[in-house]
Structures are given as structure tokens and as C-alpha cells.
Amino acid sequence: MAAVRAFEKPFKAGFRNAFLRTAKEIDVFTKGGIFLGKAVSYEVDLRRLNRVAERIIRGLFYHHKGYRLPDNCELTALETGAYQPKSKAEGLTVANSVYRVLANRELIEIEKGLFSYRFNFASDIPDASMWALKFYDRIVFFGMTLPPRPSTNEGGAKEKTT
Image (cartoon, rainbow, N blue to C red; front, side, top):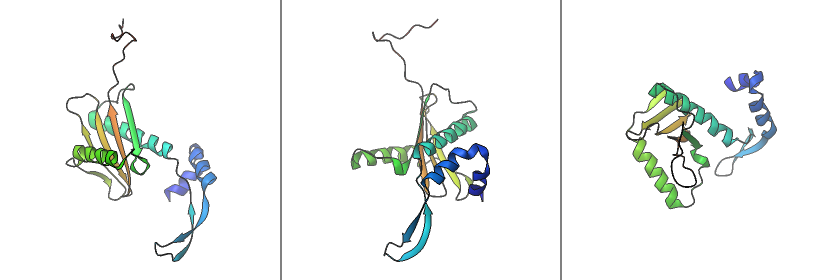
């Protein structure tokens, strides 16, 4: 099993320690309240998972574009369950925007039920893209790459480079 092998690797010490630090035994019940037994539960470090999704997007960007995402570009990935909109309307607006951009894009499945993704590159903004990554048919990350924001000095004029 891959998770067990990961615990044995010295460079996975951070993952192993985080898992062991938060692991605990819990009672499991059905929605109707029937006791099913005990199971192991642990807390997920969403910041760590989001960074992993960012690295995957960086690799997929290279795979599809043929060049690295420039270091000064913005890249954000967020597990959808962690997204906390300010209002229900904001959540619907974001969901509809992502859906419009990605709904008609090809679904690329690496291994059925294990990993799939969709993406779209902006035709008018270099290095801008949107991504939806899906793991185990249930864990979804949305990601976005954007070109760097233009830098300006306090006077509003663009900085001169030599």
C-alpha cells in the first residue's frame, strides 16, 4: 500500500509526523445513528495539500505549454471544500465562472477514478490559465495562473529598467 510505503521513506518525515501527531481513534456511525465500529481519523493540513496541487499545476502547465510557468507569475490552488465564500451569492458566482471556463474542456484521466483534470489557457492573456484537478473521484482543487501584476513606483509611472 502506497501510504504505508510513504511512512518508511526518510524524506517523507514531515508527512509521517503530521499524520501521527493528529491521528486518533473515533467512533463511526451511519446517518441513522447505527454504530459501525472504530476507525482512525486525522486532521488534514490543507495548506500543505494546496501547495502540492500548485506543484502539480506547475508541472501540467509545462507539459501542455512546453515551457515553465515564469517564477514571477501568480499561482493559486485551493481544495474546494476549504473555500469559504463571503456569501452564498459569491460562492455561486465563483462556481459558475469556473464552470463556464472549464465545462466544455476535455477531461483528461490519468488513471480512472484516481486522477483527472481539465484546464483552459486564456487566449488573450499570456500565462493565464484555470485548472480543475480531481483525485479519487471526490477531492477537487481549483487552480489559476496569472501573469505578474505590472509594478509601478509611488508616482504611478512604470519603473525604468537598465
